[in-house]
Length: 137
Image 1: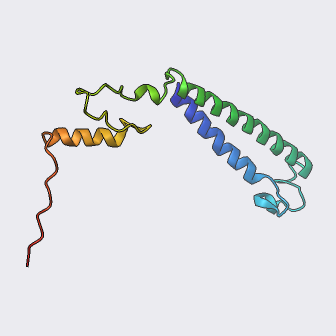
Image 2: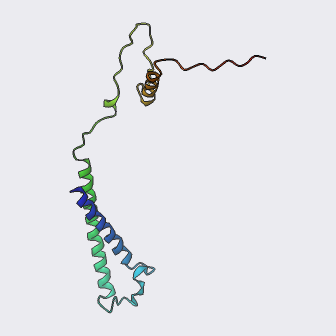
């Protein structure tokens, strides 16, 4: 259903661009070759053509707005609203009474802290190696 609506939306967009480009602007636009507002072989007068194009633009713009809203509603339907705070890991009490509880910053347990924990687990909890001492001369 959503794919069909996207195709219809794209057709409306292309038609809207075409109708807007066909309209006569103050500089003439793409319809400047009509020669005095006669249209194609006198089919429509300049005034009638302007009214038809204006009406078509308004209808296509309304359809564009409608399909945009429907697509937005369909995209958000079925999603559960959740908060960033819900995904934060719970802080636990320190194992020993004298040990520090860790960072008490508002973003404790953030992405960087989780990456550090994963890196320490991969290294077996070992501390990073100390740089070699500078040679004495």
